[in-house]
Image (cartoon, helix red, strand yellow):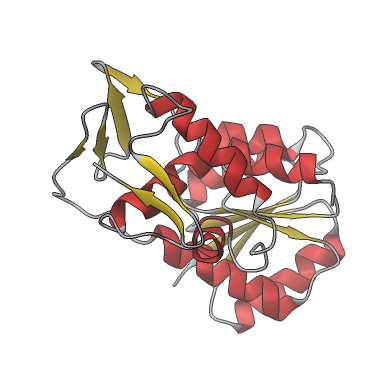
Length: 225
């Protein structure tokens, strides 16, 4: 049974989510603020966290940052904030998807399923992928360049992992948006441009002339060893 931690200070939303999630076979944990969310995540070990940003004690982005120090499972933001800056901040901090309130329950459940499915169990024993510039360890989820580990945000890693696992084949923009950000974000390709530029700055010897993270006009993006 998949365990969901719902973090929201609105009791009506918590009640609605608890009823619907339980009806669909989930085990539900709840927290009403950031402090109790971190405690519940540590003790309850949920498979996915559903998190509001407008919490009474701390901003939800701070909770995401705190969780990502040790928590590797999906985080789905459920927030009334619709500004793109809020979305980027949450995704950059480590959220896997962002759903705005008011929301349709069917779409929310679909996004929840997709977030859990995308992370899945860790694959063991995969050999590192080595380029002339850096090494990608898919099992440990780490990047090394010039003998040092390169820190990637969760979103940057997710994007890189999809491209690396494509085995040199181009991945379309729509597919990347769906697999990294979830359903409903296909038109927001500015996210893709921003994160590809960040990855190139961190990994490419010459970011303006990429050798490994390539743009394929009309086809999407491709990883080249």
